Figure 1 (cartoon, rainbow, N blue to C red):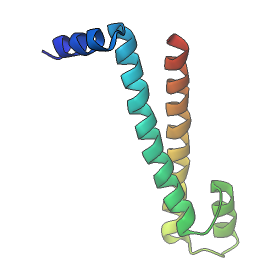
Figure 2 (cartoon, rainbow, N blue to C red; figure 1 turned 180 degrees about the horizontal axis):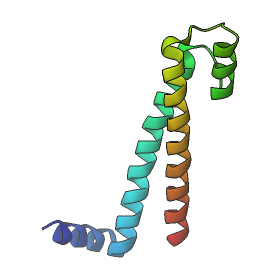
Figure 3 (cartoon, rainbow, N blue to C red; figure 1 turned 90 degrees about the vertical axis):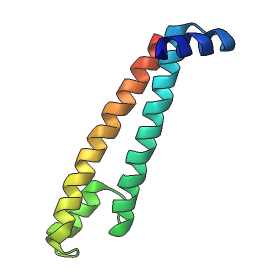
Length: 97
């Protein structure tokens, strides 16, 4: 069923099925990346900082309470890794087009 729908759309749009699926995956990953970036910015704004490093420095200096800032710092580090991996995946898919 899904294969038929994809083929129908590809034919209607005049695009090869594989290219359509690649473009769709790129769009999906871009949307996910946007959400990860929004979540990252929300945490940075919460502590009025511009980077993970700045948040860590403020925690170490005692300018920001350790709890829940350390947990948020870990979340930030994880988000940054996910954003990097997602960007790499997008770039690799774009090269394949």
